[in-house]
Image 1: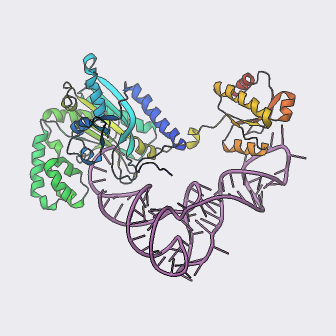
Image 2: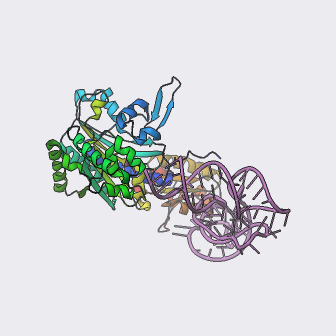
Image 3: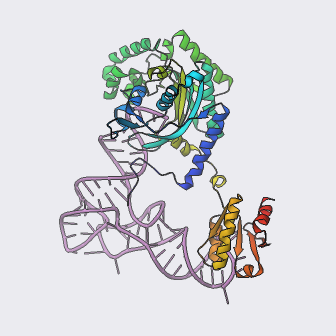
Length: 418
RNA sequence: GUGGGUGUAGCUCAGUUGGCAGAGCACUAGGUUGUGGCCCUGGUUGCCGCGGGUUCGAGCCCCGUCACUCACCCCA
């Protein structure tokens, strides 16, 4: 038997209703906030991700699905969506007609990590990005929109963490102060953190090894090093969140893993996913558009882990399951022939209809109708055919009505819709 | 990449010191000749993950391997 690839999964019909519900809720909400959908390809030149995500990140170093195509160009299955959206923004010169663009996209990402709960090698994200707006109001609104989605989906057990990473103006000062501290505590740090303290000291703040946490417990907070502009920006974001009654906490450990983030960064965490606490994360990346060859345009965005969201959204499956309205129990060849024609008409009339073509006994057809939770069973047997009628049984009340075969579909429609 | 746990019927899982491969659910037929759910009776379902080894004999012991899973790392 051929099995699916390690770390990949099938989303089965039993689950897809929930996925659709979440996707539809997100689409409707984002469209109301002025976002429009963009659908970039899943395959891009490797260079795009190297330049946007950063050479020194784990994603680029060891998690990308990269391979040469027949011409020898290095291609990569996207490990995240932002790079592609930025590339598209630049390539199509979207900034020219109107630099302010709000876009969302939903689709699969690929990272070759060791699979575990809430982490797959092909996983799905809902992304939203805003270009051309530097204002902190946009930051706060984006966070509000994200929180609202979770509320609409009745997700409890989640909380918002925010932080500011500063800008090229103020981050070097903080980085220097942090590096000095790390240097002095080097012997307390784990191996990874010793390596990190040279390449990306911010990441040490995120380490979960107890001795490392201890070492950085009194580390300087980036918030204390923000330049006046960044500090004012961060203040406004918080102020507006408070005004909008969005509950959040400032988390100075919140250091995003991707190189391109600046200023506001945020994450939605949950306790319901084992070791995977982040369900959604995002932040501002004011330098990325320019870094990828576009004009200097600010931008901010977030990504929601759709697989993870699906796991924590619990909905009444009954309300999501689609039951057939009418189940046609046809007996004998002639009954089946008639049923086939009528079912096509009923389906086209928007009435969910199923037929059992097996020719088995009425009892087994009734059992099946019950199993698929049909609202009505239409019985087409010998005696009905003789009389030129069919019997419609209400499966809940057990009431049965007889319908003439003349104008059957029309009469059923009016009966069912009344 | 590193560690722990688990692989037996479609599903959930038993399986004794190594001795005929099991249960519940599901499926199916009948009890009820053309009427579902509850009940009763019968029936179908297995490369015991895969490969090797030990043994008269392996689902069980040993070695290897693969998969799943949880965790580390990192992230959504």
